[in-house]
Length: 100
Picture (cartoon, one colour):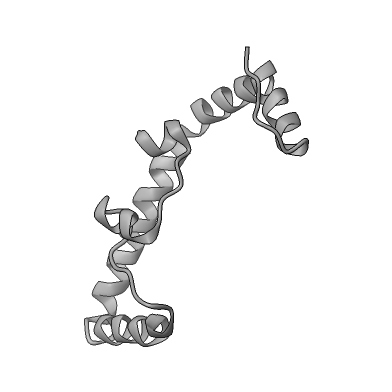
């Protein structure tokens, strides 16, 4: 809620501390780290890996679909308001917005 309402930007270490990412690696270790994870996954049962991927993808899609109408309605309300127009104008003019 803090990040959503404040639009505060965070670095990788903070994202890891909050549990938003599972690990932080140095730039030169990105590919080796990714390959290590891929090799660990590849040692597991292919059918089990596919089942887990399908279940997680399906759960995410089902949740998103169940929220779609409300998100559209809320988005339309935001985009139709004065605050949205002021936010866009401020961004284009490279200034802080002045909300009423």
